[in-house]
Length: 123
Length: 282
Image 1 (cartoon, each protein chain N blue to C red):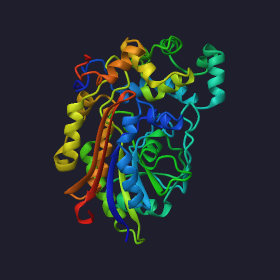
Image 2 (cartoon, rainbow over the protein chains, first blue to last red):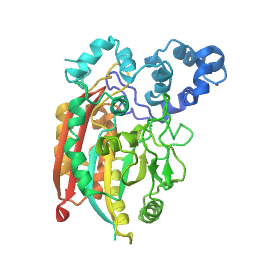
Image 3 (cartoon, rainbow over the protein chains, first blue to last red):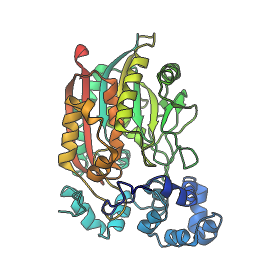
Image 4 (cartoon, rainbow over the protein chains, first blue to last red):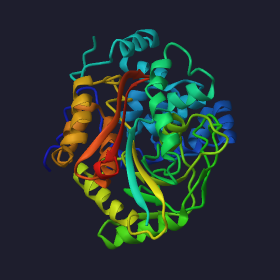
């Protein structure tokens, strides 16, 4: 098969059909967190809640570690994963900073200074 | 007959809605964002559209991975603001325009664009934030809205060209509706932003401004921009900008720019905004 034109974008996983297939149950678990009673049950016992979903062990571990880059590599999509950090009471900017390895303060400052250049560098 | 009178482009960052809902629109951080819409609020109050055909994307709210329609037209009489995981936004219920929506669906499908028809759907910030930016915080939205959801979550979204040509079919459909209605088309989302991975925080001011130039004066050629350029230059979520091309396709080839605004940042995103009028109605 021909290589995808977006295979080598720096620091970027494109959520295509292949990723979507890998991440189907992970993302559908995230959708379940749109309902308040599910959010409460998940926070009370994450392990038991995750075991109700036919996800891989790697996916479950990534969720419990809140390792968003790993979840994305395993088929998660950011708009679905947003339900996890919303359940934790965290913002999009918190999650974005986490994925870049920056502190939220440094990340917010980078955005005020005009954001990151497309090559992946900032400043 | 119904008439398409104006096209509006507008970002739909969720944090803008949260800032407004939580009374922070006067903060130093948010003031310049809302100031970019001061003119627009006055302008639209004078324009009094009857119906807004609002092109947006759902963010894993109404559509999960169970159903991923590329183009979905909302034909219901009302649409509830959605709970996106932190409670629904405290904004009015969105009133639909079911007769016009059904007419557009029939006309556009007969013109080779295969739409998904949606008779029940909650609407998320992608739809309600542009309404808030343009209308502020009224008790009820001052016009009816036809939600038109485009898949930009799972790659590939429809091509820019397809979106542009669809806009032309939507124009034809609107202007063959017998009632005297003042209709606007809005394209929302963008501008450059990336919300995921180590490259999160991407902003490309130069590319965005060239996009703003070209969507006004060079739209036909702009619509041929391949997806890879959007994701490389405007970020993985910047590809939402193809939705602006539906709006632009619905307008005349030559348009008059009434207003233009650009600001960085709103949370993780560059905010862009345009008001366009067809020259004959200017």
